[in-house]
Image (cartoon, rainbow, N blue to C red; front, side, top):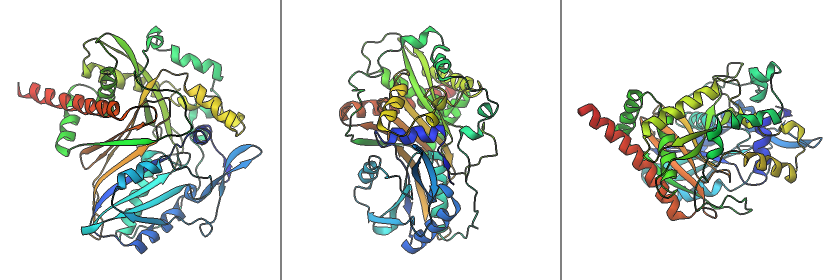
Length: 437
């Protein structure tokens, strides 16, 4: 595991020194679990995943992963009451890791009648939402009595070391990469301020709040059917609804340009046969800019999001986070360097963020306990007024709108979230009406 952090990992580590970038994956449970079996499952999973046995150390001024023995840094469940569990998890988004192993925490919120919530908090440099969700599910399967064989995995390289473009030596200079923003034409320069009422300044203290929303399996299926009928994806329509919710805060109806930042899974375009079992940070940050008409069409906007994301992912320049930002390997670890990286991040179009880990299959544990829902939350970077996280589970969709209470008012955040869900429901209802007609 002893290696330098890759560009993406190092950038997340640097930004984490300015503001916490944790994320948390959690499952609402029905049925009994035992603490000793949870800790046994955590021990086995930590044994399998090298990054769960690593700390971040400074070597010649650069951050490096360094292996640590499990005896020195065991991953164990912290037991708390079920009361106010959502607030406690939101607080974990702003509770930093020190850099010492393990760079993950496990919480078990227990309650009466066998109801509980199991949650894992990750330092974002070691994992993304998809791999974090897989780790949590593996822990719960073992804790529920499934005898999973130990699949000891070798430590994996960073995303940049597995990037075919990087391997071919085709990475251009950072200055040339700034042209990415201009590649979408003059419209890119016309974006409006992303959200009136939002304070974009970086502050020392943050108060991350989360507003949960759920779409039932029936609505989730109806949305999927509607997306296919309209030639787009669920991510496309979720992004369109998010843009329109922001647009509704921008004043009088008029044509404007608004941006959306999507987090895309890179496993399909990186070399070395990565899988969901590979814990790591294998995502790209993709920002797209969209013309929003005075009377916008949600489905047209959803198709445009799908089209732009597809073009970016197939352009050979998808991994924007290490294409536009300065190469982290050249930056010493310091607060000054972190501010340089944050300043580079803020050069892009003001955008809200959407991160979607896709659909996960329903799971009943061997002991009969049932996972009723699975969702995740992430601490939003300050250049994004809101961050919407989405996880599909058992056909339903679990969304969270996250924001910094010191920079965006509660009432406005709630209004945006309600508008977002309203646009999604309207898309489902309109499609159902069209089919009936």
